Image (cartoon, each protein chain N blue to C red):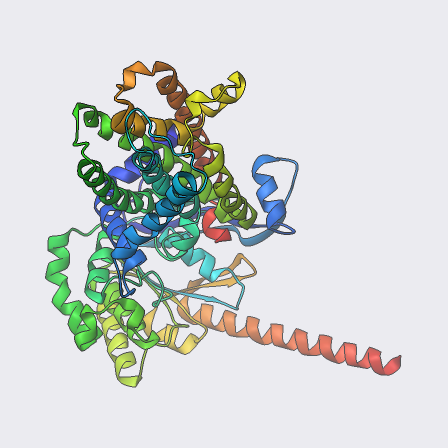
Length: 263
Length: 268
């Protein structure tokens, strides 16, 4: 059953956050098995397969577990149970301003990040010019990152992540990078990457944008996968879901108001 | 066992980044201050001066040891203590300080205490060199016993790096632990054979207990090179003690890593 066409595979993945009453309890739990945390299921028994070259949109309201999923794909956090397979170099545009060493210069951070991604120095040297040009930081390129504005950090982050020739690209739309011109540049770059044979995972609330990039959509709701299918259907499903949620909330509010009046 | 192999593998695979981060960590500590690197020397110099003043001038307790002025005897224990103190405190805070490597990018968490330790170690090498110069200036040039210095350097580095891994994991889970370490550090200074020779304590069981304290063992090792002119095989009991405490420390570090590695990104 080995399929080497798979880019990302989740097999019954569950992620549990352990909540303790306070840090003291958490510390004692390290030594004492009897202290039990409250378990919060961020991801509950999710399975799916994304093949190489596919472009998939990931929908979900806040707290649906999207970020946790992305973090697990990038390998920052681990699932509590289940199996995650990721084949290929992952480049994640999640929190662009994070993950820099503040004291390294922009250029040093390029090399540092590259090394972390398993790219050797020669290869990075080949990509360096492109990254420098894309980030467009001028003289700041050789200044420590701590002197950067948040916009500059984001630009550098995007330039690195988009240009290190990823095999799997993850973009969180929640990021708003720089001004109009730079955002346009980013979109062009993303389009260019998606056009090549790169697996693309796009997290968004905007179903319209997703339709223009992706062919498939996955909808998450409270840690569970509730829909997986063609992008148009997924978009419709998600929109309906949001509408239904809002409707339910409105009703609940009205109900409460009524009860208050009755009292 | 597998966890230990995994830790070693991470260190091999990321050796370049470890060196790079160690250098930047060191630069970070001193850059930005007008006196910069001088602080690496000024701070320990003041501490040594205070103790020398208190003991030689104030308490008049500083008799020469084995023909060496008390001051020289003192710094042979103080210089390694500075590294050990930095590791006790900075080592246990290393994961919190470098949380961006844990929660933002994929990076082997077990190598973070290592590069922090390495950074302090570089500073220590500088201080050691200065100490050798001071000894020479006082008319005690390097002798054949200095040959075993690399051994004690290695022992110290290995022990406190393991400590760094263990304590930084626990500190990441609990701030209480970190505060406790900070509070205990000062006590450890007085409870270890740095200002006095633990070998000469009269009460037998206290002496034997102190000789299981790695801080005492390292300080003794340094003094064996600089003052007592003893080879490490002449104190087999202390070497045995060190190996025992090191194995325990390493086991604790591996245990903590195995247990907490997966939780750390979620709590930091």
